[in-house]
Length: 157
Image 1 (cartoon, one colour):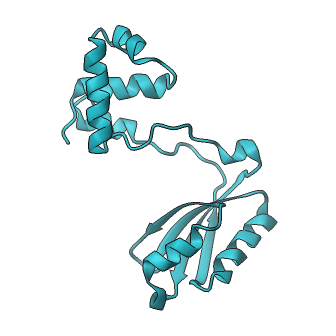
Image 2 (cartoon, one colour; image 1 turned 30 degrees about the horizontal axis):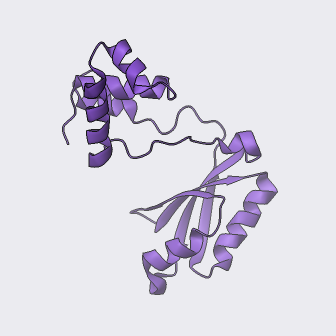
Image 3 (cartoon, one colour; image 1 turned 90 degrees about the horizontal axis):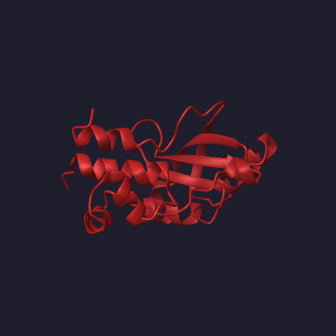
């Protein structure tokens, strides 16, 4: 779906003030409430906006250690079965099929370094992961950064 500058401005308003009402956003943007609502609906239906939910911060509730894990999987099982087995481990925040030396890349949260080892052991215990290699995050500068890309696509930048 093509997005324009008003779409990007609407997303920016709701990103900066996630609890703002559609009516208040229309006032800020100086457009009709129905325009804001219809564009939000269109972006939701088309997948431009995929999530409209709080994003809990794992560090804030006891999981300050973050690691990216390259996983080599048991190819006999297929990716779907492996992902299903790994989805049972709540500390795995994301899983992506990747190219290169590994099969999957997972972003994992843990309570401590020792807890990270427990999570890695849990992945191996599924019998779907043959080997893992982890890189611990020392500092996060930004994440989930899609708004600048949307604004660029809309011709804002």
